[in-house]
Figure 1 (cartoon, rainbow, N blue to C red):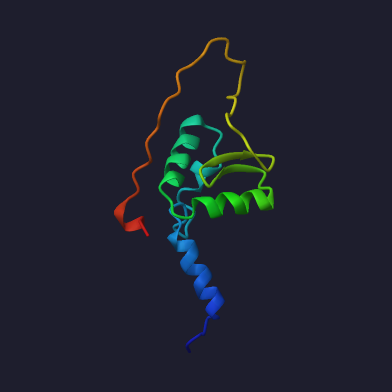
Figure 2 (figure 1 turned 90 degrees about the vertical axis):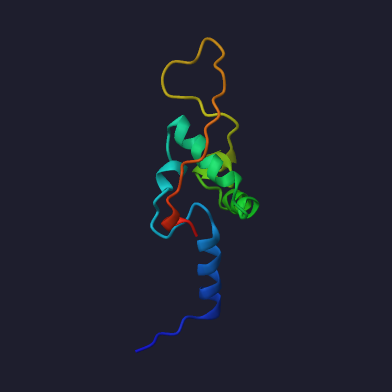
Length: 111
């Protein structure tokens, strides 16, 4: 028996699969909702090369997403957070910013 999918549902599926962060299995979701600095930077690196970056950020701001990396920006309490203070005592001296490259994605997972 063949099931028919409504055209708007087919279009939505195509849009979601075009996003770099979504492989349909949530493989990279731990990066986008992590508390770790390196994971957050890697999630931002994934977003930086995505064609849906602006739409993702606007959608997250409209929905007031409570936290996570959306459209290349870190959100907390529905607002863009410039820096995330790590857990523990406050830093007493300046620390150099570390640039983190994107996590290599296996070829069979690339959309």
